[in-house]
Amino acid sequence: MYITVREITSADVPVLLDVVHAAFEEYRGRLDPPSGAHSETTESLRRELAGAYALAALAEGEIVGCIFYKPYKQYLYLYRLAVLPSHRRRGLGLALIAAVEQRARQLGLHRVRLNVRVALTENRAYYERLGYRLVDYAVHKGYMRPTYFILEKEVS
Image (tube, rainbow, N blue to C red; front, side):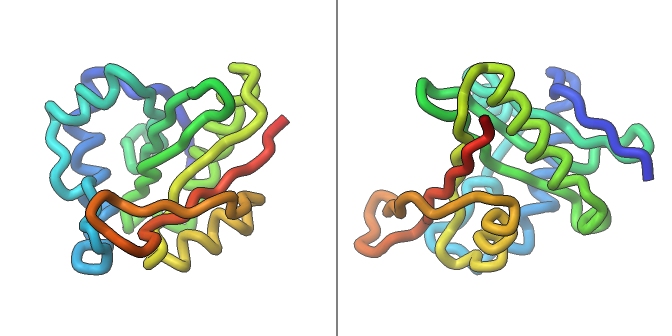
């Protein structure tokens, strides 16, 4: 399978929405609070992309995955990694993460940070295998216990 990674364009947003919805469907009912991915619309994604960036993973020319990222002063924040279930375990997620890590280096940022829900232990383990380490935890508004972990990786 031939994989390419490129920046998202405005024309990609409807397909991006389909990929995000399909990829996050497995988390429906597993997360408290529920994932915001389920309520995304083309308009909300366009608003998101006004202040952030996204990359698409293409397999044989078709968008089958994506990742969002946003630079901050001390780190680059990656979020909403999404790969269609039919295309998982083929290196698409790794390619997207590597591309974001490369963007961090290009921007002179030495750390990449992400959040992982406490309930998604398999996702935390995935990122830890890639070198991400727990730096903190946080709580969604209205909750008393930690709902997500903050992981970080040195990429310099």
